[in-house]
Length: 60
Image (cartoon, rainbow, N blue to C red; front, top):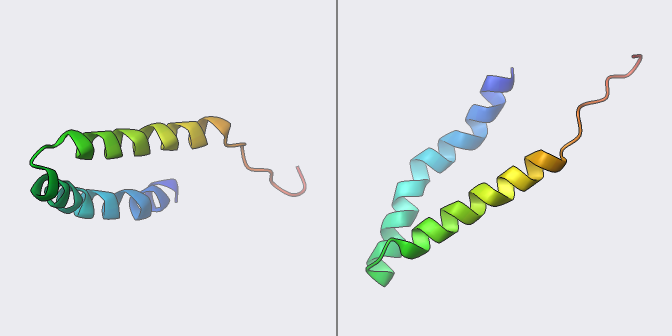
């Protein structure tokens, strides 16, 4: 199902996002780069979704 497919993509981000943000904070003493990284990923995802085409089913 669509919900299960989305879960495969979102769950690793939910699990590792805070760890990555913490590592970036430890290196830079700021959350600014974490915010920039995750905001950029969100905008990239939005762009990919915007240009995605609907599926074509054979025989229709």
